[in-house]
Length: 253
Image (cartoon, rainbow, N blue to C red):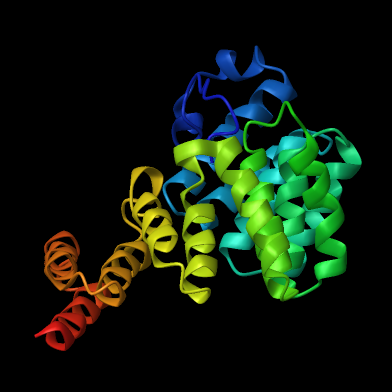
């Protein structure tokens, strides 16, 4: 996540080596934020265990800093602890009712728990915040919610809102909308959405790349489809995606 600013004066990893006078000159809030920033960095690097270790230190210094509980929620989510993640998200909202990003997080957590009723309210609030730069994420999640409700038209509406709001960043919404077009056999629109979903922030999203090739096959554009599957093999060698691309190539031949 890139929600929090990085202003680490001395890394928490090196905190013990910082001078005693430096630590004494810092307030508890400042020290808590150092641990918070290190937790944030650990999450970015894919290490939720380290993030939780830093957060344990931060919360001792300032248990009312809402960003700490927000990162707790994200860390627990990465560890697969959905119930704990939900409780931390609720604590964040209790401390900072206007902190919109956590509402998207809470809605997504309920969505993954299968509780669509509880998921909808925080997602709607996050999507409606015009100052929220990541409102497109909440709109994408609302699309998923209505997809689970088997309401494809409402789902498509939210995906379209996400794409309009997030532009190239809303690549996952493009992919999901592409699936809706594909289910309706609207191949041109599906191809356009899958192609958009395989670029920018989602350039490593192999399912989108494969969907482009598969849609080209359905459009009887075998030469272009073959080129796409060969590209997938080159971009993602020794992966399941490369194996699937090879299977599709055999179908074309």
